[in-house]
Image (cartoon, rainbow, N blue to C red; front, top):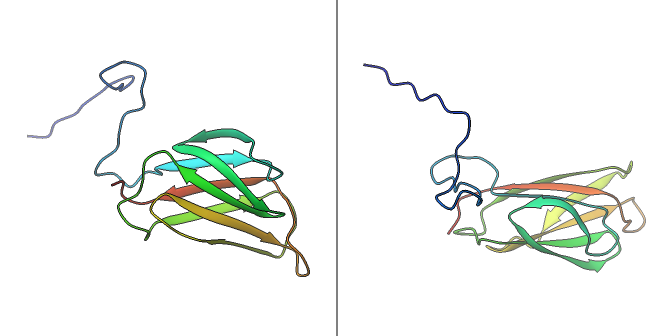
Length: 117
């Protein structure tokens, strides 16, 4: 017999916290930043942002991943020709924006998939 669960919303026991995903592959952290400082415009699962230099940011997560084999990806608003992630740990990753001759600041949107610790 097939079961169907129809709901309008799912909430944590306290009624306000996000529901923890345990066996799904949904993004565990994401953010939107302007890449000039440590201002986070919007986020989920991100505790802070480190501005480690022009065009380089460290995205720190609220809950650590179980290992550093996560999959962070990102997009930027500028027409730069090189972007990459680096410095993968269980609690952070870095994004870098490079235009072929120097690092440049750009609006960054990141998302990271992986299993939480």
